[in-house]
Length: 326
View 1 (cartoon, rainbow, N blue to C red):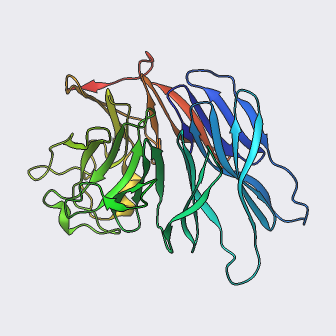
View 2: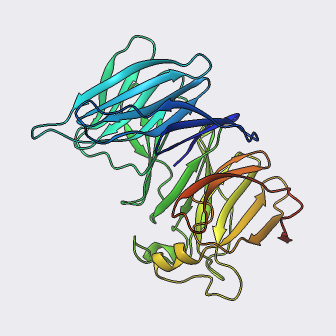
């Protein structure tokens, strides 16, 4: 999944970590993959951005290292490093970054952090910390665990973990706005949603949380009269986008697999006017885990024939886009 701020995006590939200003076609390789000294696999993964800084995992064979880079100067500093081997050998995933801390999850160890001010390393949550979508905002970490279907907030100082407006149904497919104020997800609290589980979905509505004001807003109201499956929402606080199943197909299949395989229609909702428009882009998983930057939507497209995913800047005002609005 790509990383983003209001002004830039970053993503990783076979040769390292790439960085680009929002709206630009110029991409820079800022962290190249380095050969592993032990001959093992080497990569750069799990990027996070905050201001002028990037955090990421450098994998070098039997060693993983969390680094923080000042993008404007290229200065890189290690935040945490460990070697594989022995019964406690585990991997790292879900890196996040704000102005005060870099966070990461070490499998089997828990949620960890390092202070950018004094270098103090802490384990905030011991043991298993399941987080398939983690982001750092002011004061802590917000996490959507798609495996358990719950959104939580972890305070960066007290290490307390609390659910965010859990309504009794699955909470999945979350993302955070580029300014780290708005958190958005698909919620199954509304009938017929509470009967949903990871494999079977019934309806699903888009909910958005103002992390500053601690207020949750329901953005869609199809359930319970005409439930529609929805996936992968994103917002910047002015518009919200997500994918739905296009006309002519069952709008609410019960199989989660069918939902993700069929949701080819991109929906854009203006949060001020509540005007909603859609266009069928014709590709399942067309834009997966996207981010919104004004009138630009960043997400992944699979290019025919190369079996790879490409991070794409989609200008929703492009005259080639044929929208249907209501």
